[in-house]
Image: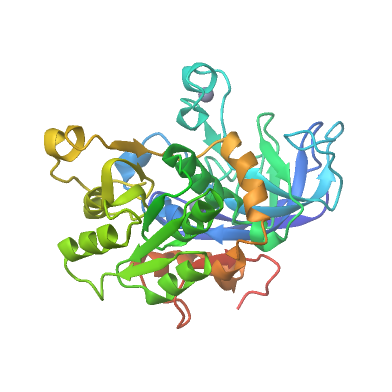
Length: 381
Ligand SMILES: [Zn+2]
Ligand SMILES: [Zn+2]
């Protein structure tokens, strides 16, 4: 143990308090890495985890640590820790992005189905149980991250800290795009202009979409950003309040006037899923990314809404190593101005207030939020 310490924000109980703790920095064990956090993106998922109902977290041992969109710089390497997870040499001072989930590599989903994101015995650096016990530094709302687990997966990053902190959300996007299978000439609708929707707009263009239409319910700031990310057209519910008119807008603006070849729903509302279905052309593809938490049910007619239309509907859940490896070149691509998505930079102690503003759908410090970055080097207010 060194004499140095680091801070970490821990949630004491379901729907409880986020409290700053201080722990001694570990000397990294053989094969492990200690890294200083430069930035951690503040994510709505953490807000949901914070306020998860008791029954949803049954069996989880609190306190837990939170924060999973991490850019960090290696400060100490254990013996034999010589490369990142794809074999690139690493040394002290190197920047890394990491895959928060630690998949077991042995279960049916890891080994046979090859969908590790559905691993049956995963843990995550984004939500770590018994986080007041060693190994400390198990998530992003912290001064350090200690990659102590043998199945940790991390990548050396040659791009900026700002871009590296988008590695995890970009991996969510890349997972969705691999399902979407965008082809040259495609019209793509991205429904929802939150951080995931905006990154999807940018990545869709790189993936070959010829026309991208971005939509948002009320947030014009985000739709302006969507244009900067490469959207050819934007549609705001404030301008087109009727759902049937919005569908018409999509059909009229799809290249072949038949609807969108691909629709990616990035809104966490059941009604948005239904609306997205209406945007897809017959025999097109819809990918659901937005409804990450249960937002209720919708009426659905298996004959009229699915079979007769011959469409594909694919749920894209979370992400895994493959998606991170494919995301690294995207976050580093100068054609994607993704740092423009950063609306705020805040110190570690501000994370609870930001999460509360996300929950209440409010501005933070008088300014519309897109992606708020926690920077632990900032002085606390
Ligand atoms: Zn996130
Ligand atoms: Zn597994």
